[in-house]
Length: 270
Picture 1 (cartoon, rainbow, N blue to C red):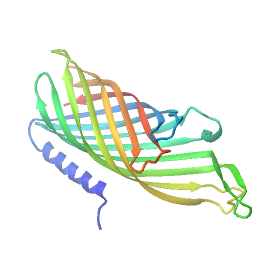
Picture 2: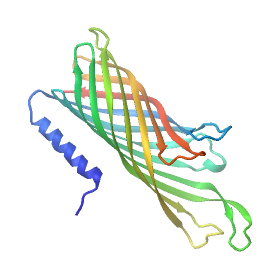
Picture 3: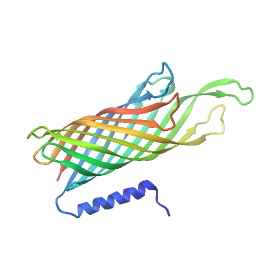
């Protein structure tokens, strides 16, 4: 049976990590983080008088692992959480979006000095988001009279897919102190599958109808912040993370999704 691409690459990265673990002078970092982004729809089309829309905010938690051997490194992180819109009326009443974000990277440190550390990496991101609403606004035409109508209805949609790409990261210590600055950027691309489900209404009394879509997606990801290493191996990072998602088939009326906000990590290195 043919394995999915994400599973094949995951197995390959795990084997690479296992090879690194079997070597001497290997360090491991385990930790957990929280990301508190705002969620906005950023207008990227060509129409006039179109504005960005600040939808709401979310909170995502999860663990991460980093393995370093010489100049090679492997990383894995998972964030799960829920987005809640600020607007609780009309379209967004009862809306909720649960998100899973899994990342795998393998990199090589191209700069390794006492004043700066630079890393190039390849990465995979698996994203799944399930959005539900018990009061979603729909519009359309009746089949018999072609009369324009609007109605509220239950609705849920699940989008999922794998993105792949590459990036670079940098760590700059503040002199001989335990403080440092860090940053990274990456570009990834892939495809997403979207399944929409519509609840029963007076126009659809038989129950749920559903339809599927697929689309290409690209992502520009940026992180930056400061950190502190304690002598016993404990570390704390505080910074900013921004993910900007855009569809490759964007038209004049398209929006990109932006998640951006504070990220806090605590870790232990041994």
